[in-house]
Image (tube, rainbow, N blue to C red):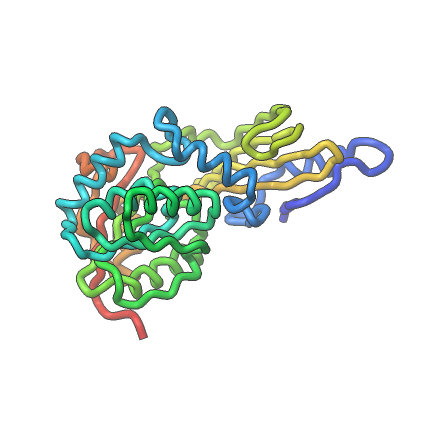
Amino acid sequence: MCEPYRMNLLDGVGLNLVGLKELCCRPDLFAPGKQPFWDDPHISAQMLRAHLDPDIEAASRSPGFIANSIQNLSLRPGLKPGDRVLDLGCGPGLYVHRLGRMGLRVTGIDCSRSSLKYARERAGQEGLFIEYVHGDYLDMDYCNQFDLVLLIYGDFCALSDVERDVLLEKIHRALKPGGHFVFDVTTRFHGDRAETQRQWYVAREGFWRAHPHVVLQSRFEYPEHDTSLSQYTVIEEMGETSTYRIWDHYYSPETITPLLQEQGFSVCDLWADLTGAPHRPDSPWLAVVAGRVGPRES
């Protein structure tokens, strides 16, 4: 198993080439990277900047897409003033604020303090009564409280199978009877599925660090598990390294439907994206509306 989360590449004699080689090897499926990740002060500030840039979709989709998605969700599965909505991985509140303006009672959970600080300040400026919770949504504990749970922009795909099943159980428990879980996932037509890709660059400052560093970037495919990995290893001036891993487990209608059924959901709608565009066999994204059926909470 190759899992060098932290390593010093300067051994007092010179560059540790064996260690450098290990940093580029293919890790075991869903091996974790360095934690904390999105709540790192520098990285979370960079993420917030990306969320708020309307011209890029690295962290959030465009304002127009978000507006159309909210409009679609107001019709299917249908939302009315007073309904309770839980947004998992809410970021700076780009969806939550729009939902709050519609008279919905909204709770957002995110692990980034920077994004939540912005979201709270923005909600206060608009006079919106929104509950924001700092933490990992895998740790949430709600029961029969929400009409709708959202998990948007492929967060579902970053979870291991164990984490995914835990989350689905918690979402089922959090929903009221008849409530809905709406989320989107990537398909095998999303991105470049080349077996292995590697590149590196040197930066004076950048997304990962505010000081000079080198980034080794690798992409690995696990086709037998419908999964790919984007791995970023950051090497700092004194040789200290940190490896960050972003997993992408992609799905299809044929794989997501039985998975949801096993967890007590029925699939109500499948779209190409959250605006409600019709799904095609080669769509890079798959948006899902799943209804809670059957009691699972104890």
